[in-house]
Image 1 (spheres, one colour):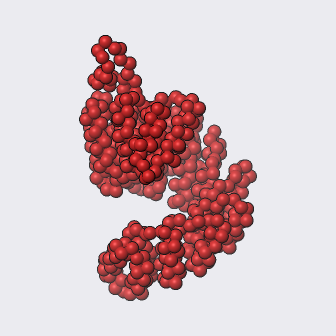
Image 2 (cartoon, one colour):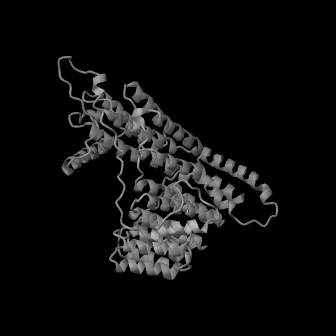
Image 3 (cartoon, one colour):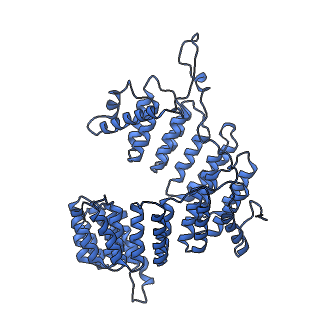
Length: 520
């Protein structure tokens, strides 16, 4: 099929033909060679050693990057991971982290520190990442490397520590390392994790323009992929089109991640026509779709209840070389359920089992929600009880799904009953469970159940923060009002709620806050 529009042509608000043409790109997928994927790894830093001689002049210097080798045997990798697991277990508040690392100083090298950065970052221990870094700098084998700084900047960014990421960038330059594309990519990503998205996007574009003017920092495909997805998430279609135009004019070629990232962002925002425009661009670039492409299209169409297109994409997936996965079926079941199409959802589940797929916990949760949305709470409870009787491990998220369904269907007493017996079936509620029930009981004006819940929170050591209480504002705001002056008092109520939340968190007395909230 031919596409008569250019790569940078903007969407027409009322163009049904364009939407149809873009969708046809899904139905007529043909196997074509996939465009080459640009490498996102940092370049070698072999020239660095010449700027910082560490040996006598007559000695021959052989420089290499301190980054972990990309090709490692599975044995070496597993041994490194085992050492990192050992170190992670040994790290505690009882002794300084440096002292723990010194016990294994003969074994720990850069690759272990990289893995430690990842592990500590996952556990929100970013300060300990900096301690490991300081320890590294004191070792004889340490050589400043862009890869190390890039990794640390990435970890700091994910934890919202933008200022620390900026400090590391300055620290890197002070050591004599010259930033490359990978470092700038990490810095851009760090800014995009900040709460102020407008400021973050402005900073990101600033770095992008700076990269274009620096020889060894030219934007690569990873740079474009990060920015395209970020602006698509921000619904900035003009900037996305501008970046695509810039990409077309550069020597960099888009890859499958380019198109999947933008389509996924548009799809999650419900921007179906823009998503289809990118799909058409993907086809014109002769980039073959992968399983992620199919799944994101199925999920996006399903959430918008465009089930004809969703089903056609699913059929196209079955005809392709790709195979559906559990997320494919889980998405269809849940989205059919939200539309109260129980028979279609059950048919998808039957097809899934007929094809030999074994349901996972997400499948069970999707079915629970599906039955709940379709006014079949008893069927949802039967499914949950069946899981309990089967003795399989039940996740807290599955318990939360069943509790949520009770609350959605106006059955707070049943939710309380299930919550009370959760521990007897070896399911232990966490903060997400309490948050769910708190909002539901507040919305239903169930003071007695709310009092019980707060006592459980106190017993389990759950200390709610201000965010916990402020989330209840949505529940209160959604309560129906018979007063004609409700709109006029909204701002006043919001201000009062903020005072209640501040008082509760300042005094660490959630019970007082709950009582005030129910009187509000």
